[in-house]
Length: 171
Image (tube, rainbow, N blue to C red; front, side):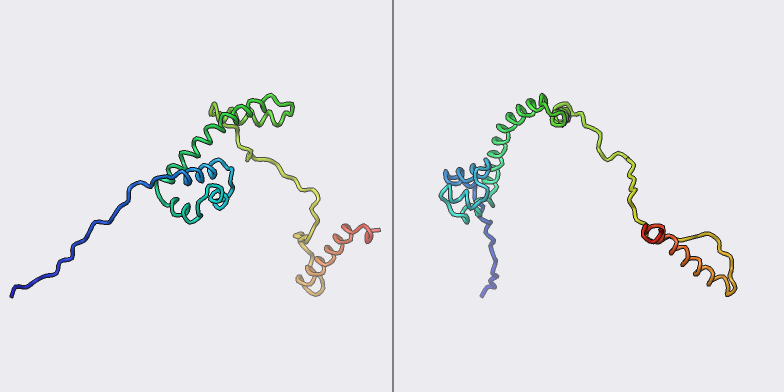
């Protein structure tokens, strides 16, 4: 008898072609892209399809490409309106609004970028309450030694400072 070997033949993986975008799916994607419906559930209910069908369809590259094309088209139409509104705001009576609109128009249209607002500045805090004050003046040693005189001097300095901060105690 002849030896027979079992050879496993691998079948190529089945690949699906591009997913056809149905009329319901196209309507659902249009509702999402235009902003008419805020959630996928609302868009699915409006278009007459199940949320699971939309979820599975969104995994397909062709469906995502269709959604992106729809979004680009919608933004292209709104960009004209936004440009017209920005032009109106430049002539606004409010100077801050006109300034910001002009700044945006210069940066978007001409590529002139305004300097950043993170320039160095001065910040002064006048109303700071004193917590602890360390007196670094040299102290004269007392009869018990240098360490005791330093501690006594520190206590005296703190009591003087707290009396100066409290108007009721200073009078």
